[in-house]
View 1 (tube, rainbow, N blue to C red):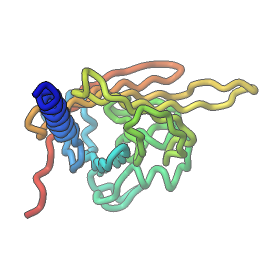
View 2: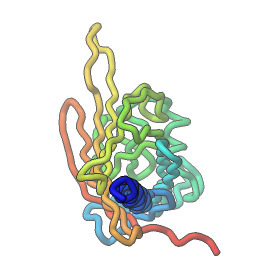
View 3: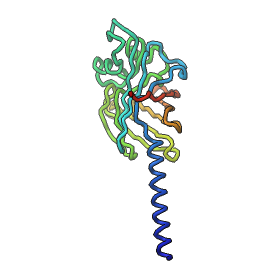
View 4: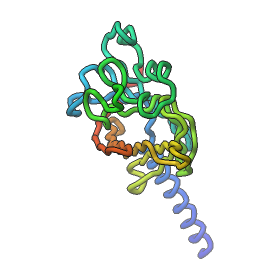
Amino acid sequence: MIKTKVVGYIVCAAMLSFCATSIQAAQNDLSGTWVLDRESVKGLPSNIAVYNMLVAQDGQKLVVTNDIRGKADTTEHGSGNTNVLTAATKTQGTNASQGILVRSGGTMGDSGKPSNGSMAIQMAIPEATYSLDGKKTTDTLPGIGTATLTAKWARGGKSLDLSMVHQETVNGQNLTALTAKERWTLSEDGQVLKVQRTVSTQQTSETVNLIFRKKPAAP
């Protein structure tokens, strides 16, 4: 009888653990197309017509693609349907100080400073792949170059912290030229994603809070 009860307790504990893991996994599913709630962002550059994040999550792999589309601009990128991040990367290569910030007309000015809006708002990596097991990975990112990426669950799995660190060699020394840290928090219903983003360079650091809403799946 005692052995039967012990086995029963073990089975129940295993089932509860499985259920808890399943519930947590469902809460942590960040997959989908996330549309920026423009009304919730102060100082959003007026030339940004569309700002979407496409997130693909498969096991311990998280792929984040930023789709930022500017308004019609016939002088530099042609149609407003062009992803300005992709266009900037093709024309400017992998220069961390030029290829990732969106301004009126495409990217940063020659001075290396955003000509319109907040640096943290405009900071976006065209595409990055993170490992959700907390391990650091190294990748060559469009518009940036070689960077170290890290993703860690925080607050008991309720939030996800993403980190990107880019270093450059100056006079034989490795210096941290650019860092971007984000904390993602998903609402209980899985329809709202809050992103707190902090972008830092050698000269400055800025933080912005963004709210994305999940785009309904096509019928």
